Structures are given as structure tokens and as C-alpha cells.
Image (tube, rainbow, N blue to C red):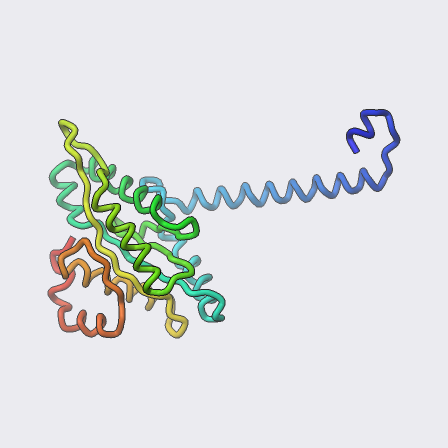
Length: 224
């Protein structure tokens, strides 16, 4: 239409109306994109770049509905940096923050494009794993664990290389229980990973829950 107008040709009313409709639609799409970007920024943790915990439950509930309808499977992995308190105590909180941010970036780089990383609190994260079963979910998390363990996350005085490992608890979103219970299962598996020596992946199953009940005072006490 613009080419026709530039040549001095008559442009029909219909063409003008089509252009106006297309322009209005584009404006709405741009406004929607702007709101999505603003929402994503608001839901991001400023230190690590991971999604903020406030965004976690709404996301999990959306996936829970898909799981209940049999549309998709979804796993989740709780993750905690091993001995992170020692990093802070030894090198200071500035280096600790660098390690925390570096760990989050390392994890995010080695997830699949559609996985999501949430900062749950402190040095604890939750990874959302769409379209996995326990076998494929463990494959993803083991890759993350191995990479994290071999990565320099910060440098201290004299260029000393500083890194850490991570412990992981893997569970599936179960359609038969509330979302919060599936999250608790991942947390239970994480505690067992810490109690078993750290730097490992533990998968939740009913036997894990029984094991936790027998070792409840031992697991988690003094672990970091």
C-alpha cells in the first residue's frame, strides 16, 4: 500500500482499514510483550538472575494441572550448595555472593531451554524440569551436578580458584497430591543427599520417606 501511495496511485479505503487493523494488533502485541518483560524482571532474583520464589508456586500449579490432565509429565529438583557457609566464613560475603551468582549461572547454562531455575532462599534453588521421567530427569541433574563440581565460580586473593559442589533431591510432580507435597518430597530427597555425604543426586520414593523418618534427627542437623 505504501509503495502504491508513493507512486501517486489511489489507495482504497479497504487497504487503509487493513493497515489500521494491523497497526492496532501490533500495538497490542508490543504492549503484551512489554508487560511480560516487566513481569519477568520483577520475578527475577537480583543477585543470581534466577526466578524469584514468588513465581514458583504459580508456575508449579500450572504444570500440576497439565500433569493431572495427562498432558505432560514434570519433575522438580531441590538443590543446595554444599558447605556454602564455609565459603562465606573463609572468604567473606562478597566472594560468597560471587559464588552464589556463579553457581546459578553455571546451572542455568546446563539446563535445557525450557527448564526453569528458581532461587528458593539463601543458597537453595529449585529446578523445574518439564517433560521428564525420573530417568531422564536424573540425567539432566547429574550433568548439572558434575559441571558445577568442576567449575571455578569466583577468585579470591592471589587469584585462588573458589568453587563448590551441590546436593540435589529429585521428585516428580504427583497428580494425586497437592503441589506442596511434591515440593516437600524433593526437599526430603535433598536432605538425604546432604546426609549421605553431599555432591550427589537422591531420587524421592516412599522408601526415602521411611528412611528420613528413621534418620530425622541425623539428617539436616548441622548440614550445610
